[in-house]
Structure formats: structure tokens, C-alpha cells
Image (cartoon, rainbow, N blue to C red; front, side, top):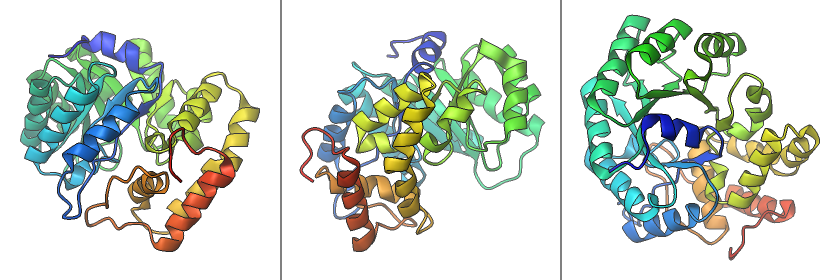
Length: 312
């Protein structure tokens, strides 16, 4: 059973760093329960505001509905007493409702609603899609503004008016005009989080647009660095942010951008580099090459951000 009301959940999530734990796989690319639970225990031992199980970095797109439900259940069992655990919901409206129901049954605090699968959407259709999912669950619902699901400020306002459990807006578009309209119209009724790839890169400017938090993929393998970076962003310490960007984040992007799909692969590569291997990625993603992994390992060392207890 959820420990937070949707409003309480929004208040908790808006003022802390968020992350999406990777899903551990064994040599046969099946979910590795022991490794996953170990990763969750480590991730929830830090002062993170929320963990999203079976999300993008968790390769939720490569999980069956049954696997996703199992992953969320394990996350709640392992970390839910210390950190709010949310799930992802996606695909068709019916599939998203199933994901939301499975997450609620597992005790998750809420869901991130991913774009509908492989179809064009207009505003009335998007409104109905989100509305049906919100009506199907008592937990908090956050929409993900990306790809074929670009929500207008007016649609967001309609959803906020009709559904008390509609609590958040995550953006992966980075359109300043669009974000300004959404925030200006909806204000503090929602909380806003950045969801662009390697969100640290955009965190400081997006803070000015009302995005008080973001989801950090690198938190998976360098949690202390990720938390320090977030503190610098919230303090609007531009000097400290730029120093960390130059020392690690921007060189990290250079490795990430070598191959399409490395946004997830490089996170699992980072875990391998620090001695907390969570296995390979599932197709259609591909693992880092030996050279790319060696470059990432060297970068972590050179940046001086090897996490405590790592065996790099």
C-alpha cells in the first residue's frame, strides 16, 4: 500500500534528486533478482527523493508486462520503506492501465506515463488517454512530454482540473517557449522535472523555468557526484556546476554519443566499471565496446568520483 497521497508524493519528489535504477539481467538476459535487489539497496541508501522502477534507464521498453510488474514489486520490497518507488506505464491505453494497476497492487507510490505506442496523437486523444489512466488508479500520475505525446499547456490544465492524482510534468523536449506556457498556466498545481538525456547538462537553465528537479541516470553508478551536482544546481552555484560539467559530464556525453542507444548502455557500463555489474542491455540496445568501457572507467578515475566501496 502506498505511503503517500498524490499531493504528499509531489511535495516529496519536487525537492530532491530522482533516478531510474537499471534492471539487472543475467547471462541469459533474464531478470537477475539478486543483482537487482542489491542495486536497489545501494541506490536507496543515499538521500535520493524517488526511484522509478522499470523506467527508461531500467529498460522498461524491453520488459514484458509480467516482468515489469515483478521488477516494480521487488523495488517496493527492497527500497520502498526508505524511498518512494514509482513505476512506468506505457503502450496502449489498456496496457498503461494494466501497468498502473500492477504498480498500485505492488505498493508503488505512482507512475510515470510514457507516450502511447507508435501512433500520432492530438490533444483530445492525449487528454483521454491520460484521463483514463488517472481514473484507473489512486496513485500519483506524472506525464512524460516527449516523442508523440506533446501536451499543450491547456491539456495539462484540463487534466490537473479533472484529476487530483495528476501531479507532475516531465519534459524531454527542452522547448523553452512550450515549457514557459505550461508552467505559467499551471504554476504550483504540479511539479516539474527535467527528462532530457543526461539531464545534468540542462539542469541549471531549466531550473529557471520551474523545473526544480530532474532524473539522473548517472546516479546509478556515481550517486555521491550526482547528489552534489543537484545541490549545486538548486543553490544556483554556476561556478560549481560548470566545474562538474567540464570535469565529468561533458566528457561523459562524448562517450555516450558514440553509438545510438548508449544513453542506457553507458549507465550499465558505469556500473561494470565500478565493480557493481548489472549485466548487459537487451536488444535492440548494445553494450559499450571494450574501448568505450575503458574510456569510461578512466574518466571516472580521472574525475575523482569513484563511489565509496567501488572496486574500480
